Length: 338
Ligand code: SF4
Image (cartoon, rainbow, N blue to C red; front, top):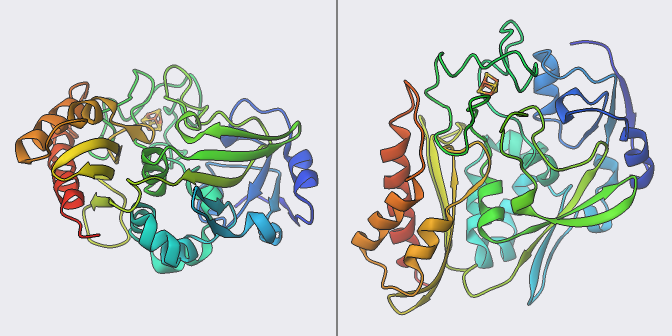
C-alpha cells in the first residue's frame, strides 16, 4: 500500500472542506472520506485507489449521523450507522424488512460490524479487471483505455444499463432496498446540505464509467430517509449467489407491495447483481399495478423487467436467473403474513 496521511475528523463541515479537492472522479480523488473503510482500504491495498490523504469520519457518529430514527412518516438512517446495527434494529426488521434483509445478506458478520451505511451504497464494482491494475484496459479505473471485460471473462457482469464502455455490475444489496422504497439521500458538501433522490445518486456508465455518482468532490452522505407507506412492511429481499454466505449477488430482487386482497395497488421492484447501477424495474411495476398477482402475472412482470437485457459471452444465464428471482420475490412477498 502506498503511504498516505491519516487523520480523524472532529467536525463534519471541516472534513468536507478538506476533502473538496477538484477531481474528475471519486476513484481518483486525492482526499478520501472513510467510514468503516471496508471498500476503501481494500482498493488501496490493491493499488486501485491511491489517495494522498484519508479522513476517518467515524468520530462523527454522534447524534443524527449515527442514529436510526423511525416515525410515523419516515425512517431516517444516519450514514455512520453500522450495517449490523441497522440489520438488527427492531423498527427496521419489523416495518422495513427489505432493508434489514438486504443488509443481513451482505458481506460477513465481521464486515457488517465495521461497514457504515453511507459508504455501503458507494461501494465499487467487483469487476476483476477494475480491481487488478495489471490490466491496462478499464475505462472505470483508467478512462479512455477500453474495457477488458467486454471480450474477456464476463460471467459476473451486468445485462442491464450497460454501455460499450463498461458492463460492470453494481455489487451492493442495501441500495436495491433504498431505491425500491423511494429513499432520499442527505448530503453535506462545501456549499452546505442538500437532498437528492436515491434514484439519482448512481450514474449509468455511458461514456464516462469512471464517474459513478452525482456527488460533487468532497460531498459526504449524512443520512438516508425512507418514506413510510403501506408497502414497507410487505417487503422482502431475495439474493441468489454462488455460495450461501459472504458472496455478491448473481441476481437479487428487492420488492415492496401494497396489496388489496390479491390485487396489487402498487409494486416497488429493484434488481441487483444484473445491472450497472441499482435498478428500478419500472416496466414490471406498471404491469402489476391494479391487477391480481398470480404466478402468470409474476412471469409477465419478470419478462418486462428483462426485456432490455443485453448479454455477453458468459453472462446470458443472468436473464433467466434474474427472472426466476423476481418471480420468487414477488410470490414470497405476496404470501407474507403481516
Ligand atoms: Fe473496467 Fe467496467 Fe470494463 Fe470492468 S466492465 S473492465 S470496470 S470498464
